[in-house]
Amino acid sequence: MYFAALLARTEDGWQASEPDLDDVETLADLSELARAAGDEEETVLVFIEQEDAWFGVIRVDGEEDPRIYVSDAAAAARSSYGEILLTDEVLGRDPEDLDDLVDLDGTEDGEDNDDESVPGPSDDHVPIGPLGDTDLLADLGMSTSDLLALSGDGALTGEALGEIADAIGAADVLEAVR
Image 1 (tube, one colour):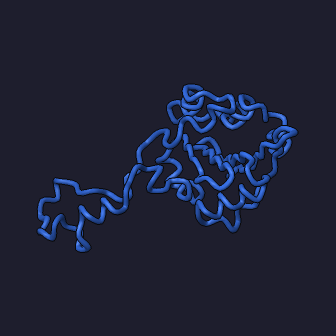
Image 2 (cartoon, rainbow, N blue to C red):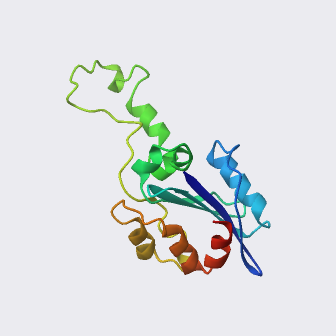
């Protein structure tokens, strides 16, 4: 079960809405949905949570690239919405580097790779634990250490998004859409 909310920072404070994610297939789709929720240069946050497994925060500021934080990348990777957030950039992968390292046949430099005990680069390796921009909420009142503390040891209390909203002054509006 998923929960998602859009929080747009306006001159009058935060405004929250529950987005329809049915047509969201890519990070670009999610970013456009966020941009549509606010005015041109407003900060918009997208909260996505999968029941007690992981949460993600996406920050969109105007036309800038979205900034992403995921509480547990490995858990998110097993989720359709989580996969949207785990871009090569967030995972620290450079697709061009992978192309240079591995030929199309999957072997380095076109050589045969008979030694299966030596793992090659894995395009699907996702680390366990928090991943992404830990400073994305620092200017809004949520420190990096507090954000990381909510990710804890992988066991979410279900209140992580509420605590984030409280720290940035949006607890009441988030609760209204929950």
